[in-house]
Length: 79
Image 1 (cartoon, rainbow, N blue to C red):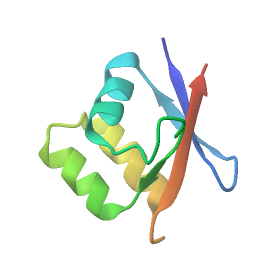
Image 2 (image 1 turned 60 degrees about the vertical axis):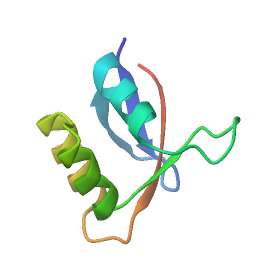
Image 3 (image 1 turned 135 degrees about the vertical axis):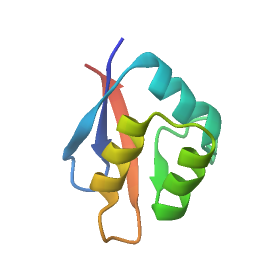
C-alpha cells in the first residue's frame, strides 16, 4: 500500500512512499504520544535515517521537502 507524505503545516504533498519505507519511518522515529500522527523531520533526522539504512529515494524525498528550513512536521495518509 502506498502512503502519501504531506507537510502538515502547508498541506503540500511531499511524495509517496511504499509500505517498507513507511514502516522504516515508523520504526525509526519517535512518537510523542499514542495518538501522535505526525513526525518532526530536520536534517539531523534525515542524516540518522540515512546512516540506519534508509532507502536512498526516501532520503532524497525528505531532504527535498525540508530544504533550507529548520525542519517540518510530516503526516501521511493512504493513497
